[in-house]
Length: 97
Image 1 (cartoon, helix red, strand yellow):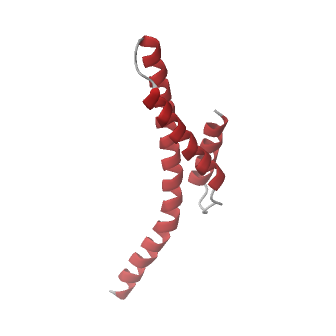
Image 2: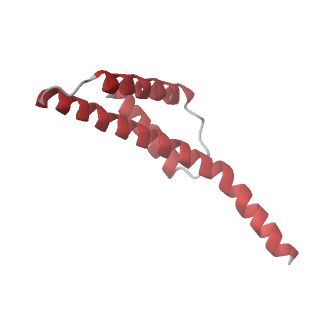
């Protein structure tokens, strides 16, 4: 749960800050490891009864949540890297017309 809070904090900081912040490599790698761990746990659970099916669904929800936040964090970073060059190229093309 602490990892999820840390990732959410980093994502929101990156999202609402106009500057590109320092890449949180440790948080990203720990999140990727947790995603792999959850994927293997989900694969191991055989839905034999209602309880095991419920546990599997909980793990799947947690996995989806982590994947979403990690993707959102990385997308926000990519936008900051790629969009300035897109706009500067577009403005240069407009000026040359």
